[in-house]
Length: 303
Image (cartoon, rainbow, N blue to C red; front, side, top):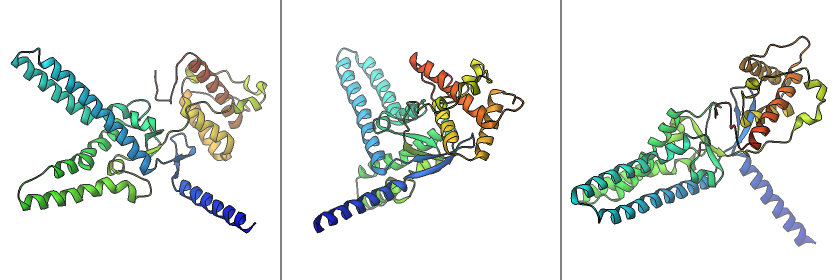
């Protein structure tokens, strides 16, 4: 009996420690719509794993194209072979430097490695991830990752070896930076104003509008353009607002949505009725698009 109690206490302590560890990764973010949502940061191991997957993909691309080039050069004259090598070097440069930028500028804001581990890049101010932020965080990567390898490959006399060692230590500070800050940020994230977070589920949440009376929504006739103003991300934010926010927050969000879609408040219209009606309309529209194979990620997705 005592052993069972000891084991139960040990499991309880382990569970509490894990809950405390997970809570340290949760951050509150206020969106441009005025709603506060919670995000979970990616761990250092998740970021490292995503990076290793991306590096493996990059090298697979480089090696595959290099092998293809070696076979093709055999059938070329010397001048054509030199041009082919030059083109391959340009291709290698773009794969090395623009692989991350290309994928993070996309609608998913994540490389294949990040998508495999369920993480993505987002802005720390709650706005849309901009091209400037993506460029800044990825050009710093050359200092964080490229320089250590260059220093390791340096050789020569003792002075050069000491310079290489000091340079490697200096670059190591950049590499280990995510481990020693609570937000798990790289130096590139710090400069660009970004986070790497756990990617929220993209499926639609439970329909809370089904609990309200249909007659309440019949007063609101939103146009297709008004229903297209937002996407899945905003639907989730609006659901959080309806479920757990204060009346002040609901009023602020209702005001922003009315301004966004050009809606004039009707006599006797309440903020909660407007939000519930717009939620139901937005959800129906997004479900229709998903049935047709279309997925509107957020309000910036104009596809």
